[in-house]
Image (cartoon, rainbow, N blue to C red; front, side, top):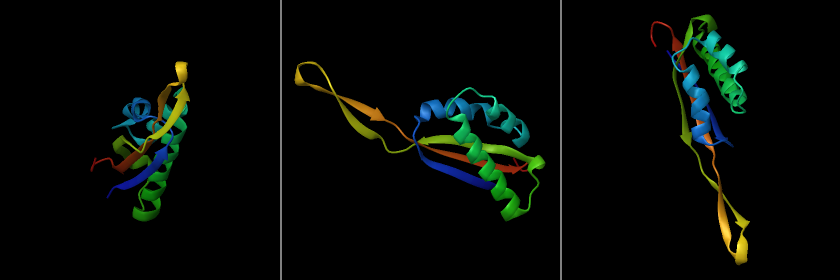
Length: 113
């Protein structure tokens, strides 16, 4: 029995989110929360919220204990890109791509993961 949580349309590029997510993949939930608490990246707060939501889903829906959970899967997919225009020299324009991502975290009991 695994529990899943997804944060969609997070205003951070997937590449930056993956830097944080790679640090917690495969770790147990308690150490993953500690890592995220002391990670010096802006997206770490969003990843921590998503992890806590997955743990709460496991507790509530499957009656699992948080100490026995492991981060089984964690990934950041690309969401829609917001396209903006910045004026440049001689009347031309440059496109600014504001990227978004969908962060998914799946937790499972230790023996299942």
